[in-house]
Image: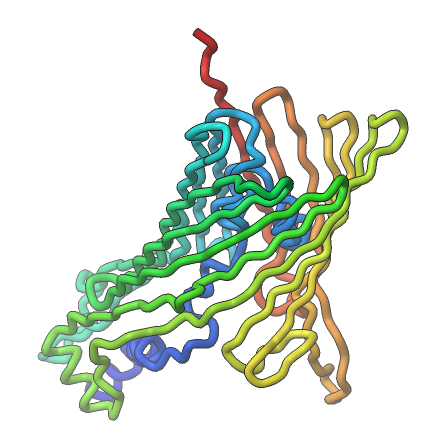
Amino acid sequence: MKKIKVLFVASFLCAFNFVNAQAPKYSNAFLDIGVSARALAMGNSVVASVNDATSGYWNPAGLLGVTSNMEFSLMHAEYFAGIAKFEYGGLSYRIDSNSVFGFTAIRFGVDDIPNTTQLIDANGNVNYNNITPFSAADYGFLFSYARKIGIPGLNLGANVKIIRRVVGDFAGAWGFGFDVGAQYQCKQWMFGAVARDITSTFNAWSYNLSSDMVQVLQETGNTIPSDGLEVTLPSLLLGAGRKFQFFHDNVSLLAELGTDITFDGKRNSLVSTNPVSVDPHAGVEVGYKGFVFLRGGIGNIQNSTDVTGKGLTTFQPDFGVGIKIKSFSLDYALTNIGNASVALYSNVFSVKFDINRKTP
């Protein structure tokens, strides 16, 4: 019976060991997925051009581009065949002509995970009523502030981040961090830079394991998780873009090239060194009269091998469309997450509302 019980709890125990042994690489990776169908369709290449409520996530300096007094943005996405759900909500609020406040909330989680650790009782009986569901979820809350300075065309912004990660009632973590961003516009050219987790972000983990679970860990030779810190090292996001107008300004073309630079060791990216890795990506947006938009992008460029061991380079194409009717925007993206060689695409929708203060 002891061996049977080990089989039921093996996957659950591996999850604990995975969390406890986290290295800095890919820490808080749920914050790297991206928000808004517009940005996802453009291969996440929006750091230089973003100018709406989603700027609180992409580049807080972009909040100054919001033309309304208040703006809301919402997104829902499901990944891995609907197993994992991603929820996003953001807002911007104009304080005055020179400053804007923003707030972003993100949840990425897997719900209704069966807890089978009590499936077999002390007498060796199987009781399916003892199976209880739990959730493993990550939460991110970003408080943003953007302000114009004396240099024409240059805007600055910053984020204060609060991270909450939970694994049922068994484990949880709190984390705190900071981002800083800048945008500079010169005529039709746009440039952007964001330093994420600039002081490193620290997640403090704590565990609440029952005596039965500790006993199983000991009997199976697993490490008993202990309280500790998980560190997210700084990263740098750079972007440059340009906007073109055609046919008496009825048709617009926005093109942006971006790159994500990480400092946590070799990653499976186009440029991979120790400790710096570089992940380039690009996106375009074609608009007609500011009403309908067609978008495309490429990213997640990786060096890989085929079944014969031959080296090859893979990339992830993205596609999307959008419409804007007065103060309402609806965007759609067909995008991927994870390994670029696996065609596991998701349909992503996002909406945006502008609210203008009434003139007295």
